[in-house]
Length: 126
Ligand SMILES: [Zn+2]
Image (cartoon, rainbow, N blue to C red):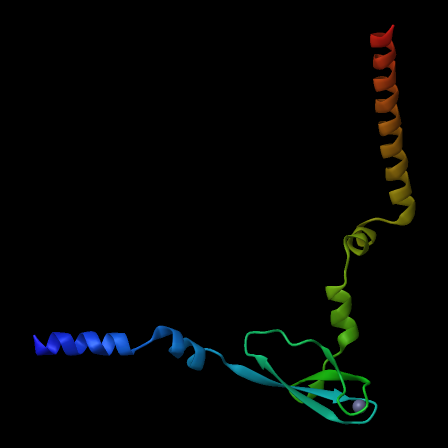
């Protein structure tokens, strides 16, 4: 009986919430190196967060570049990947003349359909 109540106290004392706050909030130091003044800016991000590739240099305000394994990442390459739009992807598959042809086809189709619709409306009106 005494054993049971003791166990109950122990369970209540272990607050899951406070444990989560202390144990699982891992942080990672992220270093940005400025090419302009060679100043390194150090920031703390949550371990599971994706740090931005560039950060404003705290010394001169220029763009400092994220350091991975002691080296600067190449933001241009990765930025292109991130900023790739549907239009960019489309241009990888089709050339502009091809797209113009498709547009022309599509417009002809729409015009034909509109024309048919107009005919119908006239028939109904008459
Ligand atoms: Zn700087």
